[in-house]
Image (cartoon, rainbow, N blue to C red; front, side):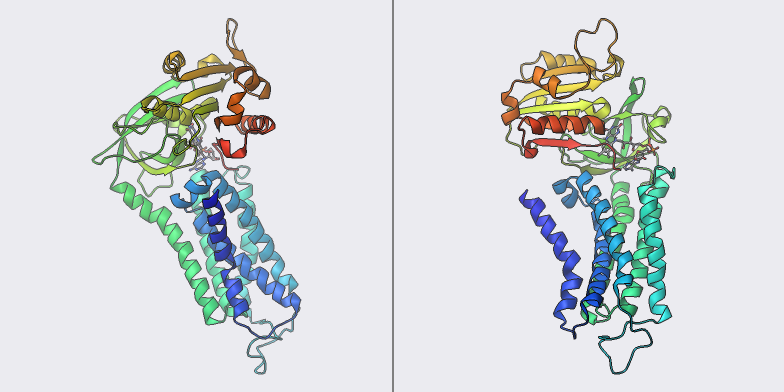
Length: 440
Ligand SMILES: Cc1cc2nc3c(=O)[nH]c(=O)nc-3n(C[C@H](O)[C@H](O)[C@H](O)COP(=O)(O)OP(=O)(O)OC[C@H]3O[C@@H](n4cnc5c(N)ncnc54)[C@H](O)[C@@H]3O)c2cc1C
């Protein structure tokens, strides 16, 4: 919580820095309307530049806040920047014409110089197109990798146009202190792109992995494992995820996020449970043992490391069991084991992965595994229906609501239902960890 608050303060400081610097310059005051218009422009630009950092997969940021929260915040602030940027030119009260020699600080005049305004107009048109294309990415049926490329470099183009516009047309941005601030923030944005598209792939190139196992577990789920090729492997916490690229160059954009289903141990092999869905996941039958793989690791906050709770209640829907397997396998290796409950929902029993291993865990003293099927076949004697508050009350002793740590992963509808049920039963938000497998 403290670290999240600190990050929020860092964010606010960076975003407000150009605005504050402009204010400290103590230029002759203008009408409130014009000051407001400039303020909105300054804020829109700094928000846009910091957006690059938010999407730059910096582990220090995403592993504190959670990558899904970071991405959601990135999306939210993208919308805020869009509104500020679109509104700002209409708030100005114009005194058009060329710069007046008697008004060196542009107290009365606002530039109408075509070349100063042109980059702003281009950005004005591009920005909403860009944001709408991001919101309606699925409807536009963009290939995810192509969308990522367009998103990254489209944003860079907009940032450069805004830099040109700010320095040529802005009253405050024309001042060296603010202009240098823009150059610094733009460099930070460019460095974020370099970090994702060049530095990380270069690191991955020297830390290659190879596929050690690829096996169908159920009709639509696979067990994929990789081993380090000439290095010691990666450090991670059980429950975290990586961006995995199999069979492509490390500079390719063909990488997808997958939770690690193995536990950190002496064995550097890393495992994943992958459900067939689209381009990559639907072509796992073409992946072979020995294929090259690269990972960007390890991300995510769905982990029990550093937690003091002694009861871990994991609630998984479908392939959302992947990180739970990692956590269960980690607990099994721990000397000082905590108690674990896994509530695992599927449509049919055919979809349950690692059934034997889970049955064995269920026999142990420290773990309970409860299967819940929504479309059970005749003869099924276990729990049926969906995972909801009623089912939790039936399975879990009351004291777990007071002291247990709840770890959730599954379809969005299940997460919403279960989170609400837990909050209604007095579980504090601090004791609920959840991860969605999709950013919308
Ligand atoms: C944190 C996290 C952990 C995940 N863990 C697992 C797991 O353990 N097992 C599992 O089966 N699935 C997991 N997923 C979902 C998995 O990433 C997608 O199913 C997979 O990327 C689909 O890729 P595709 O090429 O087959 O499909 P595509 O047709 O290319 O994509 C289908 C959809 O998947 C999502 N997607 C694709 N590529 C990416 C990407 N690089 N980054 C973010 N989203 C992307 C997009 O929403 C896209 O619209 C996880 C997702 C996230 C965000």
